[in-house]
Image (cartoon, rainbow, N blue to C red; front, top):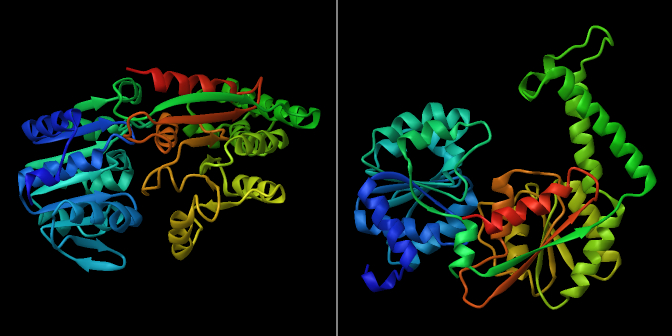
Length: 387
C-alpha cells in the first residue's frame, strides 16, 4: 500500500504516533473525527497479522471492510455468523471473539473498536485476559468510560494515549460546527398529573431504598407491605415512556422538519413505539420518513440507508444508529429522549457532524419544561463546549 493513499490530518498522525509508542493503549476521540482511519494507519505501520473486534456485524461489511480495501489492504478476512474467511487483517464481532478465543490467539495485533463494550461481563472474563497477552492492542471509543466503572479494568491495561473531545474538535475545525437548539414542548394537564404521580413514586424509592438501584428489586417496606424499589423501577420506565410520547413534541418535530424541508434529517427517540408514533404523525402531514431500529430487516436497512435523502427526508431511530453503522452526511438532528448517558449524547451529536470545513450542523433538543428533561439541553451544551 502506498503511503500517499492514506492521508492523515495532523491530529490523526499524532494519535497514530502515540499509539505506536505505547503499543497498548486507547484512543478517545469524538464521533466524526476519523478513529477508524487512525486505526487503519496504525495497522499499516505495524504490518502484522491483525484482528479487528467490532460490536456489530454491520460494522464488518459496511464500514471496516470497504475502508481497509480502499486503503490498499488485500484479502480482508471476515469472521462472524455468515462468514468464516481469514486474512492478514480479519474483522470479527465481540460475540464471535468470545465464542472463538483462537481468533485473538492467532493475531499479533488487535484493534478493539468501541472498546467500552469490553466492560461487559463476558468480555471482561473471556477477552480481557487474552488481550493482556498481546504485544499490540489499540482501543477506540468516543467515551470509553462506563457508568458501572468497568472501564477501570480495561483502561488499566490499555490507557488513554490520545484524547480529543467533541468541543476541542469543533473549535479546532476538525469537524463541522454545531448549534444545539432547545425546543420546549409543554405537557397538557393530564400528562402533567401522570408525570407527578410517577415522579413521586421514584422519589419515594430513592428516599427509602437509597441511591444504589441495583438493590431496589429487594427493597421492601414492611410498614406499607410494598416493594418500593420495584415500584420505583416501574415508575422510571413508565415516566420515560410518558415523556417520549408527549403530544406537543410531535408538533414541534413537524415544525422543525418543515423549517428544513430541503435537507435529510435524523431523529432519535428512546423506543420503537415512540419513533413509530412520530413517523405516523409525520406521514399524515405529508412528510416522507422511515424508521430504523433493531427489528428492521437487513434488506430494509440497506434500502433505507441508500435511499435516505432521495426517496424520503426523515430517518427515525432509537438506538440502532448510535454506533455500528456509517450513515451519509446529515446536517440536521432532532433528539426526543429521556436518556441521559453521556455516550448516547456524544454518539447522537456525532451523527450530524463530519470532518468538513465550513459546514454547519443544527441539533434540536425537544424537551418538556419543568421535568427531568430540562437538564438535557444544558448537558449537550456542556459536551459541545468541553475541552
